[in-house]
Length: 316
Image 1 (cartoon, rainbow, N blue to C red):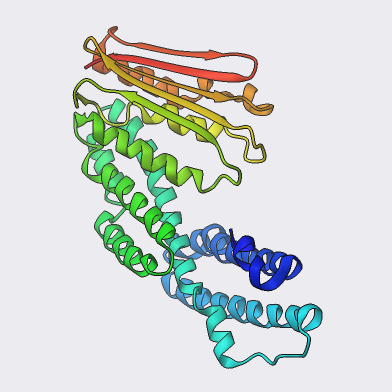
Image 2 (cartoon, rainbow, N blue to C red):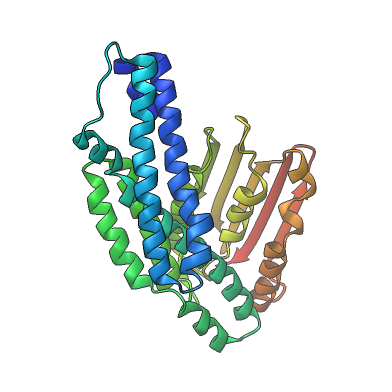
């Protein structure tokens, strides 16, 4: 997207170099914080060190970007040398704090998803006390307020980014407000799945052929997070990020007092051996279904040469 935005003014060569350099810079900020600074300092409660090192990291990275791009421009593309002004340096560094905040929230969200997986296992064992302890490790209201502030900051400059922040906020709110309930509305579960898939799709370089069809008689109730396992496993095991041929088919149908949910996705190379049918998520789901419905459910997974199919049928 950045490349095509620069093309009309800069030409292909300059646009390609600057788009690649900016993308590398964004990756450095995001993954440097998520993979190095956050786990080594913030998670170890070295908050002062985290703030100081992060500020130094941002300043060095921002100045490196400004002077590096200026050098590249003057060396290869400028007809006459243009000195780097203080205003230009500030412009190059302007978006750095927002990138850092997004990476910080992204890491918190990943940790929160991990806590939720652990919490699901604890629910199966009726360890409600430990579940409450896990939930207390995250401050959801702080996250919601921060996400709302980021949404308004991003809306004027990048409506697409603002929309993604809104979807992330709705996903988190579902975890906090709905997932602990015995029953939720099917429409809320569907909305949660759509937001989750939208957030997952931004991590995939190539467009995915995603089809999600649904046929509902009424807005019935069902236990929360029953359908999530299938969708999560698709993005974990059924996607080849280097392929242009990823295909996902999801069907939801409610009739005759039952809800049927099925997914079909490709299998690629090693993923065909590491299939979602063998994961602990499916086995945990089967145990949960047994507790909820006894024997009145169908959970089936089928593996073919190039595709993997999951099917669930429950009473509603």
